[in-house]
Length: 262
Image (tube, rainbow, N blue to C red; front, side, top):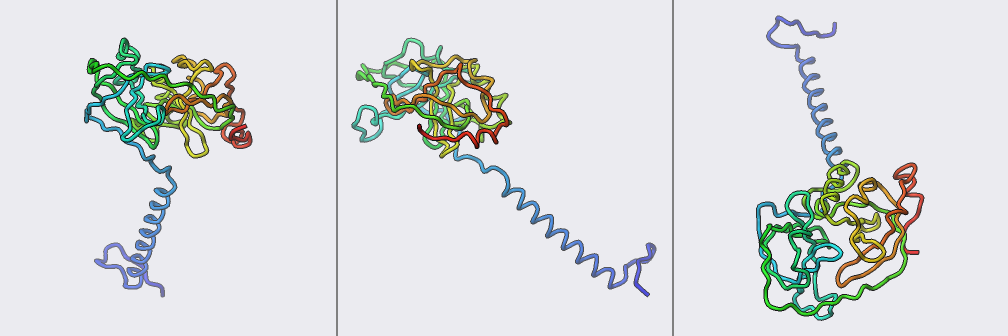
């Protein structure tokens, strides 16, 4: 006769007790393995950072176009364009820095702010009213170099979140936040699918794109054609906003559309 457990007895039969212990142990191992697999399947966090609560001082030349930024000399830099790093500037919250930098374009300044960075991109969230003009700045006239037409697949993001304020700061789950940041004045970036390369988006004349022009396309897969430009240390992607179209089929259509320079 098989052993069975009687509820009012203080212990289960030995064979039944051993079976239950093995079953519980096996289920525990299975749950632990499932947890590990779920963690490994998640998208890894990008190598980005926002120094929340830490305010630093920065010095450089303020360049207001196409988007407010600070040109910071690189140690040992010699070439006019390659001798500087460009730190994009934004205001606290979901706002651009145009009003904060008004009247300082081309000036050598000291300012205070919080650093955000991700791979090759750097940004400073300005402390309002912290910009101070220093001695006369060197004359910097970066010629805009046209590197030719390109067609790339990727995604339009708001630079503030993508460069470190939020992680991962891209994709469909971030669309609502990105749209609010762009409409507030955060500079738009195009992130290519190949190598996650960053390109500052501008109009064909090199000017800033309107704050609300890209809202319906942010955070979704796109194939974008335009001119690859270089202004000093910065790569720009000049596009015709009116030519942007939603892709039927989403990511499947994007994968089939091809990419890379023409």
